[in-house]
Amino acid sequence: MTQSQDILLSARGINKRFGAVVAAEDINIDVPRGQRLSLIGSNGAGKTTFVNMVTGYLKPDSGRISLVGEDITALGPRQITNKGVSRSFQIPQLALEMNVLDNMLVAQACGEGRLSFWEPAYSRQRVDAAMYLLERFMLQDHARKKVAELPGGVRKLLDIAMALTGEPKLLLLDEPTSGVSVAEKYPMMDTISEALNSTDVTVLFVEHDMDIVLRYAERIVAFYSGSVLADGKPTDVLADDRVKQHVTGHFAAAGSESC
Amino acid sequence: MRSNMLIWGGGVTLLLLIAGYLMPKWALFLCTMAMSHGLVSLGIVVLMRSGVVSFGQGFSFAIGGYCTAFMTNFFGVTDAFLLVMSSGAASVLIALPFAPLLSRYRGIFFAMLTLAISMVLYGVLVKTTELGGSDGFNVSRPTLFGMELDNENANMVLYQLAAVIVGVALTWSRIYTQSTRGLVSLAVREAELRVEYLGASVASTIATNYLVAAALGGLGGALTVLALGHIDPNFSYWTTSGEFVFVAILGGHYSMTAVFLGSLLVEIVRSFSNLYFPNTWQLAMGLFLLVVIRFLPHGLGSLWRRGSTGDQQ
Image (cartoon, rainbow over all chains, first blue to last red; front, side, top):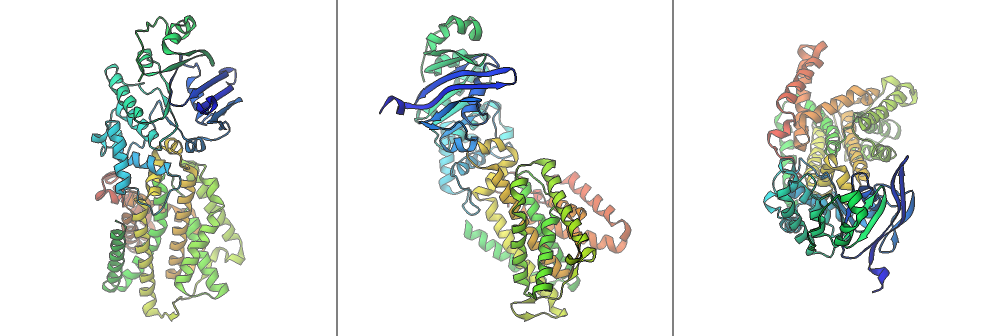
């Protein structure tokens, strides 16, 4: 396998402005298959803008985004999803009045491409597949509960489980632990990490908690004012003076543990 | 699972057919109207499941009705089954160009656009004498599969035709609510962004449901015209559409069966209010709706379907 075939996602020369605000300036990021990459940066640094451009929600003003060599810059969210890019949201996007299992069955049905008036959504095979994924995310006990009745952490897990339903090549997680209590963060990330370890999905996650980043990321890209400030191994990036100055403050890297 | 639904549908149809022989003659017409109008409101409920409400369902109702009137008066087609089916198809064809446009709008914008389309049709119908003008058309008594219908049996045969179509529509709606499309439609109502990011098209889901609603509206319009023997532009007027929305809210989106129960209740309240206080019957209807919204905010269907999941029927 050549090096270019190993690159799953490639963003070259990406620029994006919102009026006078520079959200992305000459962003160049290559993501190899199977990597766990974390995007860090202060609010407004351009992390979520980058995720939104990769998933088709926003179009870059210039530059090229490709997935396995195929240009996806001009495609919309649905087309990009169908090419194998999936995402979760900072605020989980779920059908709150439906139960957890139904949300999973919706994800399955959507991933199959063609919706049918006849094909039952509740076939044994579909329910079993949904339950299997829920078990991997420790959500099986919530299967019949209405999403509106569940706490934020559980909703986050469900959002990620739904994103994983279509067996994507690339999974983008937008602040998976935001809004979750400190005590719940690590168990939650452990659950996500274990569920992802049983797949070969490449993961790109936006995160503000540097302990989480250090523990679960293999590589960090630090953003500042729409530009990439540093890109490399977690310990190296977090030791970078510019990253300390603009992103992390005086965060002390205690050690790295890859998931 | 599917065979159980088909058996259920067959049972419901059989019950409706038997009920036709047991009820008094005056009730036959009332029930035919309730079933016809219920079909039109069923279309709104299909749309409600995906989070949009049509305030212009009178458009499809009128298209179906006028199609039946034209085919009878200008082309000599008298077979009731053929008229009803053709009207349903014509309604879909005429709704087709509007579907992509409407699927881009949500909430009040969708509602107002559908209302605008129905009122444009109303204006065209009123002003065009070739289309019957404000007086509309009379429609002669139909035949059914070559069988001539006299005054005695016309009501019964039309009731039976409506009962069979309602039985099929209810069976279909049960299958639909538990299908992949039915479940995703329900998710569109609450999590449109998520559905799009899971790879399904929200716009095509809403457009498809709009066309389904058009088909049901066309079928209902044709049956109503055959039962009444007359059509006029009021079929497309906003108050007519309002009554269909009324029935859809009364039934709720929890249960498709409840829509027909709601339609029957409205027809009964309307008939008796008309009889005892003809000038203020809308007041009785309004009070009736207020009571339903106060005590059953999710409609009559919530009486036996408390959950809000895809296993609604």
